[in-house]
Image (cartoon, rainbow, N blue to C red; front, side, top):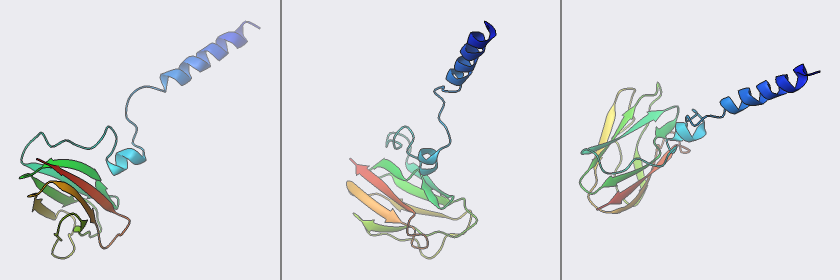
Length: 128
């Protein structure tokens, strides 16, 4: 009967080993929010990709003067259009590999959407 407690201990250990600290590829990763939005500290361009009918990441922070560049990695077309906080829109659908850029000129919060897929939306927090 000693085998049973040992087996239970090994099973518990195996379960705990599977609960590590690595990020899983769950819904937060797909939306790009695991660990919080990218910060505005690096470079002149803040990248956003369109993948799996999502903006990845869907929430970013950028500085006035930086450029946001959206790149379509999906096999389906997408658009980018500001809904709140700014006025910009891609000129027609973006095919796979196409990019669209906007240079940010004012602080605030910008909400944007893909007009082809209205549930696909994102937010840019623009800081000084």
